[in-house]
Amino acid sequence: MRSFASDNYSGVHPEIMKAIMEANEDHMSSYGADPVSAEAEELFKGHFGEQAKIFFLTTGTATNTLILRHLCKSWNSVICSEDAHINVDECGSPESMGIKLMLAETKDGKISVETIKPLVPSEPDVHRAQPAVVSITQNTELGTLYCLDEIKTICDYAHSKGLYVHMDGARIANAAAALGVTFKEMTVDCGVDVLSFGGSKNGCMCAEAAVFINPELGQDFEYLRKQNMQLISKMRYVGAQFKALLTDDLWKRNAEHSNGLARKLAEKAGAINGVGITRPVEANGVFAIIPEHAIEPLQEKFPFYVWDELTGEVRWMTSWSTTEKDIDNFCSALKELI
Image 1 (spheres, rainbow, N blue to C red):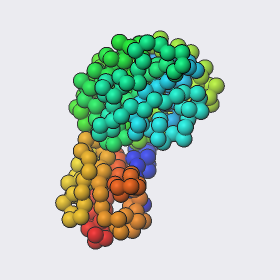
Image 2 (tube, rainbow, N blue to C red):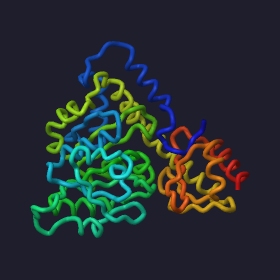
Image 3 (cartoon, rainbow, N blue to C red):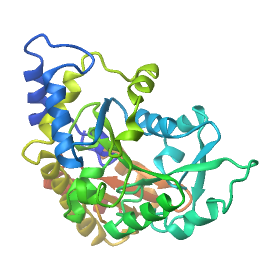
């Protein structure tokens, strides 16, 4: 099966699988006290600074939710996009932890200071949940990117109001590669306090990380991680994946590949009569409108999601393992069905 449903559908990159196998050759200490995990943490610090606190987890939902739970008291809220994964696709996980989400209006999937301001009270109000965090997704759920100035502007405003900034970086590698910047330039230098670093969508297997750029905010997070069943006993297998991903720019190579093929997919599919590309292709997601009669037959051959049931808009995602042949076959099938 070749899929355009999600970059989660792709397998594990061979270099990462090799690293897992190498970590499997001997006995090692458990719960992260192993040399492989230590090496991976040092690689993270090379990107985010020696001060950063790094915690490995297994799912993006757990990473997002536990970070926000750690930053919020029971009377706090989190400001996020109405399209945010934490709002739409995490089965109420933040709310299950008592975190109220306050939804800011978006343009092309992005929030801004102008849409955040109405959700920040001018004075503390005992009758309202008090915002503690602004959460942004890079790249967004609509495949768009915050430029560095947009991130910095949001961070500056949030900090002026005593709020932290969390970045959901499920596809952070795709964003950095598309913008041609380093992780540091896109996070540390812009003022981001903490991020969820995604590995699973970029060639890893069950590998995510909470990166507290502001180390004070990471104080005692290890206890919350353990309490919520995300302390991995054989941590070396997650550490090995990140060690491989962050060595020799594998993260960047994978992301550039998937981003490039998304552009090719949009160009080739968009040239077919009856297909309309609906959004800018800035990373590895393509959004389109195709004739309704073609959707189900095409999904049977190449799984993908209908993004908006009302408009019929569909989403196609590319990954590190997508090939030009996949795109050719997909577009040929689409053209035949239309």
